[in-house]
Structure formats: structure tokens, C-alpha cells
Length: 476
Image (tube, rainbow, N blue to C red; front, side):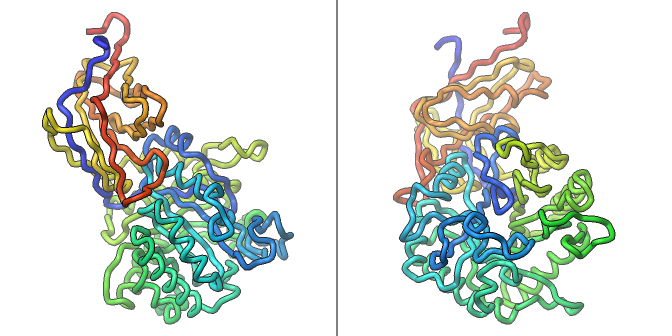
């Protein structure tokens, strides 16, 4: 292909963690899962991790039908069912790898992202089931497993059935099983409600032992939240009756207070993640939601609290007003962009929320090998592409069987097996040139799993070719 030159002078590119990772929730009790092709194309970069929300109540009547389909609600409340109204976890001894969330997890990992699996569970779940789940999740590592989150609350079924000491003991037991069977899975404990004016955390004496065993500490925080959605509306004179409106300063102070109490309790420091963060457009409107969320992310990147290692935006598409998109009530497959979406696209391109890249020249005789370990710890390949101006076409040609995520400039693209071309023209939309842009290529697992190890290797048989075309009369 003389017209499509080979990219020369390759680099080895090591991806490194962001100061604070950008994660995203995709689906919950109030929104459906949206495929990663759509999200990546819309947002223009992969996330470190995608959070899925499922439940496991295998001893219950009605299981594994989703609670809201199996039972009528007992009150006007999202959690007024015998068990939690998350998607039912389709694994375990009675399940199948063809059920969800396994297809979604494979979709996420094919697109160069890790998984956070939020799983609410009956604390009476048999050990045989826990071991089974550990084995079936093992090929998806590294995976963050958030077991019985918000466990100091009173709305989930596991909280209504078990006392806090039992909940902590269950977490610790399951954590031990995971460490033995699937050590690449990192466990996440989530609580942190401050009581009264003394700064003490709710149920800390009973739940505190989890902090010593969990790999990651987390808390969920909403700058405002319509928690009674969809059973009432938020009117100004009804504050506290179905909704709260905390604001940025309140949540910021709470984050520091909760982390300080976790450290004091354990005598050690671990990473803290906010695994659910948003402001609710139901409370003061979508523009205010955008303002509050932008202010919080902006404060994180400017003040840089070193202990905060990730923020999960909850969520991508929501039936209410807690999403980057609002689900169209006429067609659930259609998303309506909300004002924060454009600002979020800007924020996740900030270096503070982006993984780093270390580039080193690769010898001409060195194989074009890549190794995928995690979404922020992988070895890929890179090239510098010289441009004489702004192209009208920038296409990259790869070998057909490769599964790749490709960064051209600041924009990311996905190439599935069976395709050859990546149209990267949008990556140079603002290019003024002449100059160079960088192209980085990584190879996550094509089937979304690590069958035999914690990493996946892939080798390009040849460097990519490139097609660059300029406006007519400007080629050359």
C-alpha cells in the first residue's frame, strides 16, 4: 500500500494511574445499562472503571426475578420490596455465565476499562455460593467488588435483615474467600454517615472492623438528592421530605472528616474512593446540577486531596435527573444529554483525572508486543504522526484480528476484532498545524476476560498504516 505509509519509530508506552481516577456508573435501579461503544463515542475517552449495580438474594421467594417485577411495592419508596430492586446477579450455583452481569463485564473490559461490581447480598448467603462467585469473577480481575455498600443505612434488605456486626462479619468472611480464590479482586467497603456534632460515624463500633480487611475505603455522597424519586416532587417548602440539598462545602468537609475517622480507627491510611457522586437535577434544576458537580470536580483537581483516588459519576443515563443523559420517557433506548455532560467531557480530559503515559523508544528489531494488566497499568505502543495542516481524513489501518483502544491526540477510539480501519479524523478537529500528534495503542482482552493469568499479551504483526488527506489543493 504505497499510498498508506507505515508509521515508523515506535515507542513503548506505559500507562500509569491518574492522581484521581474518573469512573462512571452504568445502570442501576433507576437506569438501564448502556453499551460501551455508545459511551466511548460520546465521551471520547474510556474510564478507569465502570460501576455495575446488582443484588444477590438466592434464598428468597421470587428470586432471581427482579424485585419490582416479582412484587408490588409495599410503600411509595424505591426499596419497598422484599429484596433490593437492583438487577439480579445471574451467577452463583443456579446461574449461568450467559446471564448478566457477565456480558456487560466483558463489554466493559473489551473497551479498555476495569469493573466495579456493586453487589448487595443476603448475609445468610451460603459459603458455597460465595466461593462459586469468587471463582466466576476471577477471570475479570482486576475487579473492584463493593460488598453491601452504604451499610450504615436502613433501606437495603440486608440492613433490614441483619445487624451491623453480622454485616461486618459477612464482609470479612467474603473478603477472606476472595483473597484465597481470586486475589486480583479488590474489596471495597462503603459507609460514613456522621452523627451529631462530635464527628462520630454511625455504627462505627460495629462496622469498623471492615476497614482493616477492605482493600479500598469508600463513601457515597450526593450534593443534592431526590431520594423519594419517583413518588413525589421537590418543592422549596418541602426540604427534608423526600429530598436533601447539601451542597459542595458540606460534602467536602464530610469527606475529610470521614477519612480522618477511618484513619484514626485503624491507625493506617488506605485509598478512599467516592463510588457514587452526583447532584440531582430534580432539586434545583439541571443547570444547578451541572454547576455543583463542576465545582466539586474542580475543587478536587485544584486542591488535590492525596487520599482521594477515584470518583464515580452516578450515572450515565438515568430515568430521573441523576445522569449525564436523561432517559427519554418515550423510548428508553434514547438518551437526552443534560447540561453537565459537556462539562464532564472537559473535566475527564484534565491531566488530574487522566492516566499518565511514559514513552520510551523501541528498537527497530523489537517485537510490537503489548501487555494489558489494568485500565491504568498497561504496556502499549506509540507513534508520533507528522501533520502539515489540519487533515480532512486521518485513518489508521491495523491488522484485522486485533482488539484495540487507540488514542489519537486527546481522543480515544475502539477497534474490535474483524475491523481494520480506525477513523481518527475527529481527533484533529481543532488542529492548526503544522506539527505532530501522538497515537497510542493498547490491547485489552478481546473476549473481556483473563482466562489463565492476571494479564493479557498481544503482538501486532506490523505497525499501523496511516491515511492522511488534506483539503483539495493542500496535499503534499
